[in-house]
Image (cartoon, rainbow, N blue to C red; front, side, top):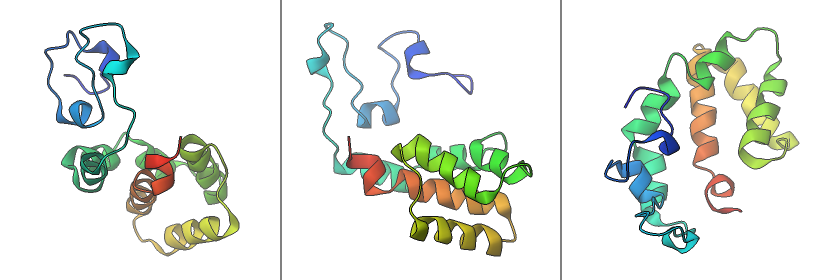
Length: 131
């Protein structure tokens, strides 16, 4: 499928995608929400940690890490707050904010630094398991 295609835009239920299967794509045999399992599992965690698909999306030159690296108008604190609000519905605490500041400030490649931060966020227990 073309880049940017969302799950709801897939043509039919016969479309197989490992990411969707791991994260509970229902068989769509009925309209019942009970087809989808809301429980987190080990396969989901491992996929987020090791998936080439996740890495490719993080490293995409048009992705959010690249956008943050190019954005010279906002401070790193503002960027970190935006990421945390999107992922956790809260701002980073002082310790988290300092870790982000240090990582971005000391990085020679700003896009790589933001990729690292995004990867850490999506692999945080708070992102994966808290509802």
